[in-house]
Image (tube, rainbow, N blue to C red; front, side, top):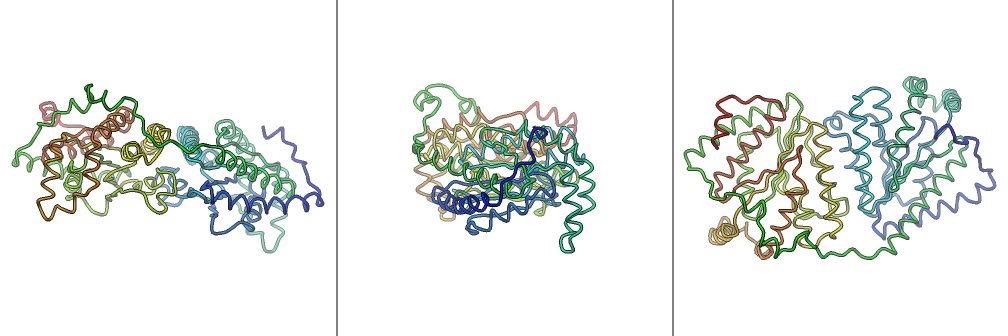
Length: 510
């Protein structure tokens, strides 16, 4: 593809002086319209060193409203960034609705610089193509405009520009020894770029290759391409009907009540006596503490997600998991309804921001599954959005797994009768009254709708790399041991810890 480009394309000064100011003013107006329409815009600049990325970004930003745009210069990942999945530092930088983000280099460094420099294994940069495509598709499906530029110059032109910059008293620092080393690898980078275009040029995030030899041609093509993309998105938004918020289930609520589901097979009579509970509690807490240190030593991150019925005992359960851990090695993330920036970004944004770094443990009290539970049942998102979320969540968890993260997910299940008993108990006991609200009672009235959403969630998102564990939680003692044991065994499995014969026998008996 790159070999067929005409790099001699030019625009004369008269034509440039006539068209470019109009394009800049048009982009300023489109920025305001995108802000009003709550359309996020991401602009990605990739290309050769000395091809003019910095100058182009400077021209782009200088006439736009600075309150609605952020420029992210991307270099080699810092230590904190290397300890998380490679997309983490980009998820945390995506623009909110109505905002614009400009990336000087981007997530494509994974399949360009990291690949050519052999900084990662071939299987890592190959799998990155899928993760990048999924990342961009999620953002596009959420309404983001993604415009990707590759600024192209020839090997000869790059060498000429490097020499010219080195002659400048003020700019010679810009050309480094590393730049010249990369120049020697021009052919390798060109080959990597060609495959990148083939694998990631999609309808929702197409590549625009800019012939960047002539400065005026480069600026006009970039500004016109961006303006056209924003105009198209605004036009599509104005013609698009408002999404329907009625959540239709794959199986009717009445039909679900009449058929047996995975939840009906849960044995809620399971329980522990206090003495047996305390013995196992101590055993598993000690083992988990040991595993916490081992995860740190081996730089293996762990994420534990809790979902369950109101009053199912999530808080008390989490407290028993953490009470013997080193507080420096874990965090507990409590999730409520999104507000502020959380509400203006893709729903997965706030969860990516809380991903633990390698060697640490994060426990989520409520999770990203709110999209297919409360948001679905309460009509906070459209049917198309929550149906799409099953795939998005699976891909999100696969990205975590690909990084080496151990993922544990719990659904704490209680009967409707047990929930009523606990609600009434909370109303009677003064120090528990804060736990019961009118919203809890309203949610209880929608028990069947939530039950259906739970069944769909379990069936659509239990994978080999992130399995669901349904916890029998009518007895809180049993539920606490079940979750602790599951966390311990899942981490041991992830670390390759062999179980003793005694432990295998105990598991079989249980």
